[in-house]
Length: 159
Image (cartoon, one colour):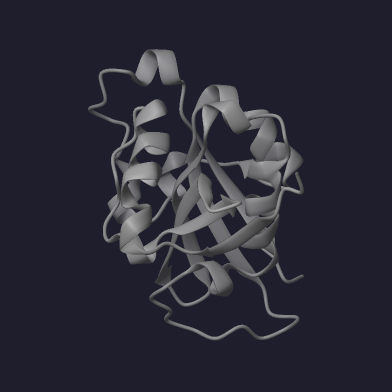
């Protein structure tokens, strides 16, 4: 059987599968299903993410999850490569347009165990205080913070 992986925006019928993936990581479903970008393998949702542009050329990766039985198969790398290559392609509500040779930032909060993945994708750790306002405090009240060990990460592209 030939496996065909496609990256596309989710549709209403994908909501249950994507919700299950995010719940595997203890993450809630962020916003409307149509705002999520997913990876489908032969019509099965195996990964998903949500990217928002909160300021011109400044993006935040709200969630990223890969189905547990699809881990270590390059699915997360495939999706993240597309996101860092051109976040405009993975974001539904844009404030700016892609312009070659102009820098852009993607920030996120990585759970401690995922830090190496983000570093391998070109992200660097930076201060929580530098995160955009709505995301800066997201881990402050979390009861799992000690186990999760969140780290704010930043990718600078286009330079």
